[in-house]
Amino acid sequence: MPRPINATISLDALRHNLSVVRRHAPRASVFAVIKANAYGHGAMRAAHALVSAEGYALLELDAAVRLREAGYRQRIALLEGAFEPRDLVVAAEHGLAIAIHSQEQIRMLDSAPSGARFDVLLKINTGMNRLGIMPAEFGSVLGRLHGHPRVAQLTLMAHFATADDAHGVAWQMECLERLAAGSGLQRCLANSAAILRYPEAHADWVRPGVMLYGCSPFADVPAETLGLEPVMTLASELITVRELRPGDRIGYGGTFEATRPMRIGVVACGYADGYPRHAPTGTPIVVGGCRTRTLGRVSMDMLCADLSEIPAAQVGTPVTLWGQGLSADEVAAAAGTVSYELLCALAPRVPVIEV
Ligand SMILES: *Cc1c(COP(=O)(O)O)cnc(C)c1O
Image (cartoon, rainbow, N blue to C red; front, side, top):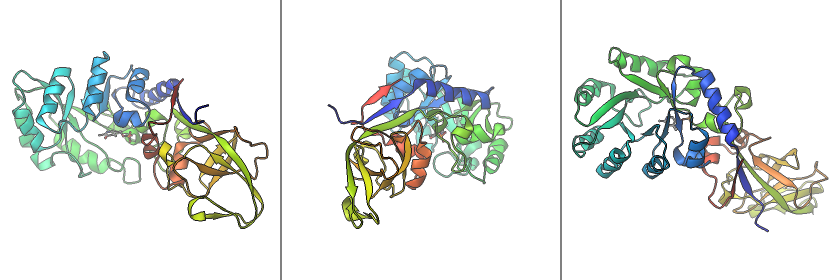
């Protein structure tokens, strides 16, 4: 028998979550963000389920090429554009849209093969200070790209740093509107948080990521409240059940000590499967349909769960690590991270079941 762990990916949930994007941003076209192997869900699988999206956005060139080769005709955008001149040759060959976020990339474009013409997303730094050309350079850059022999189409792109918290998007929107006013260019701005919270930021194209996968971009709003459905469910089973006496400890470092007689279960799931090693004692976990807590340190291939209140649990009892019945957001919060990181970390050794 194979090791009892798997990740179920629900294509219906993906489609449902896209419909939530549509409900919030009915007039915008959608770039479904499928970077990082669709946040661990499988880029091809996600693209297939989200085929009604007007475009896909990612940053891995090889995955973008595979989408084209699979026959997808939508706009496919490389969110970080070219990393080296050769990338432009491949992008041109496959009709990929490219972000341009720096002067170096403009120089690459200048020396791209003649005949190549790109769909360009011009990324502006409106305050996140990661990628993007500075507002002060915007006029001259626009001058260079307008009518550039290698540019077929130009869209403005910006990214929000605080759409998920109280700082909001207004401070970045002001900068953008000032620059974009009168340019007549289409704009592509909103991530999941801005889609859900700031209609004024929807513009022409939106870029939902995490919400498509059924997780909340907000620390204080559960995905369920947003009408989102979990796409990935990471499940396993108990492979051992044992009784502890007061004073017995669990796992590496013996960080959890029983203070009374208790029953625990060992779950076939560890950090080599993508479960966060930093999840402390008390992280929520579902065993046999009952919510309980993890105990002690997560190890590479196993973790332990408290069965004190689940007398029916035995070897073979199903366990949900996250997904249907236990939000990845909650597990992530307990581990001091965000669901994005959990989903992306799903390890290749975990078999995937598509439903
Ligand atoms: C990842 C990413 C997104 C999607 O963000 P979510 O918070 O997952 O919706 C949108 N735009 C850019 C540029 C990104 O890198």
